[in-house]
Length: 169
Image (cartoon, rainbow, N blue to C red; front, side, top):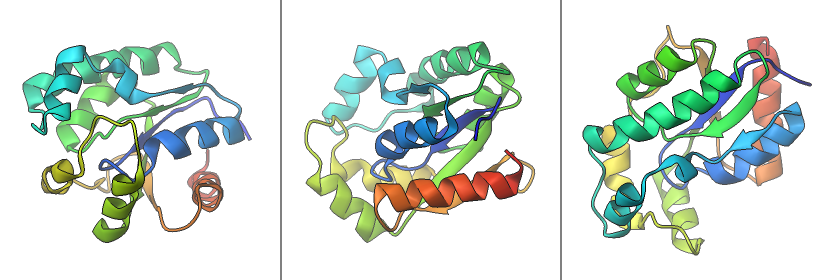
């Protein structure tokens, strides 16, 4: 299965964007880009200190992701980005109009448990509440779909690929 679309794997911290993104890219035969790699050092320092980002922090980061997605237009690719607000997704779509969003969703307890168990990531668990407070789920007029993150990474990826096929990708 291959797609000429850029898929943006979105969701709150801890849903598995960094795990599912590369697995999905492999399944689709397209390159993967880690959204966290597009953050400027100031954003990482801010989050590491437990301070949520504001919109002014996010715009340059979203523009960088948008540039990558624009460069993959017609070729396909998978990139991770929390893309929590509609306005963030609109900004990404402005750069890459054919982008499709894959929203990884899940129970807060499960996500917090997974965040607590990971090492070497700058996002502290205490910012999870701010992520859920900011989250605006995909709306009916947005190209995208949601996949639950219960289960193993392989199960989640299989569900995502099946959902993408049903979506016509």
